[in-house]
Length: 188
Image (cartoon, rainbow, N blue to C red; front, side, top):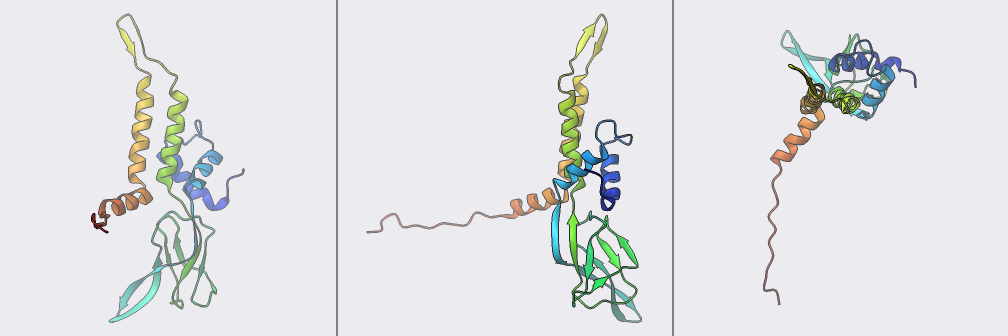
C-alpha cells in the first residue's frame, strides 16, 4: 500500500513522535496503516464559525472543526453544498479561512486521525520487537537491555494519555452518574 499524498503531514508528525526519522523500525506505509486504524470519517460535519470583528461588525471567514488532524484531501461545502476553496488551510488544527464569507453552515467531508494513538501502537510494536532482549552481567559490568522495552511501553502510555479521543472519553466517563433505580420489594 503506497502512502497517500493526503497523509504526508500526518505521517511526518507520527514519525517524529516515535523518533524514527530514517524509518528503521517502521516504514511510512506502516505509520499510515497505524493512522488508518484510528481514523474517523466525517460526513458533512458542521464547522464552527469564528467571528472576526471589524468596525463593530462580525464577519465569519474562519471555521474550526471540533477535532484536529485531518487528511488534506477533505472537501469543504457551504449551505448549498457548493465546494469551497479556502485561502488558508491548517489541516492539522482543523481551521480554514476564506476570502469571502461562505453561506453557513460550512461542512466538511473527510477523514480525521488520532496520531497519538497511532504513535502508541507503533511504540508497542517496537517494544514487542525488543521483548526478547535480556539483561546480563559480566564481571563488574551490568547491561540492562530490558530498559528499552520498559521505556517504549511507558512512552506508549504517555501517548495514549495525550490522545484527544481518549481524553474526551475519559471526561465523559468521569462525569457520568449512575442513575438511581427504585423498586418495591413488596409488590403483591
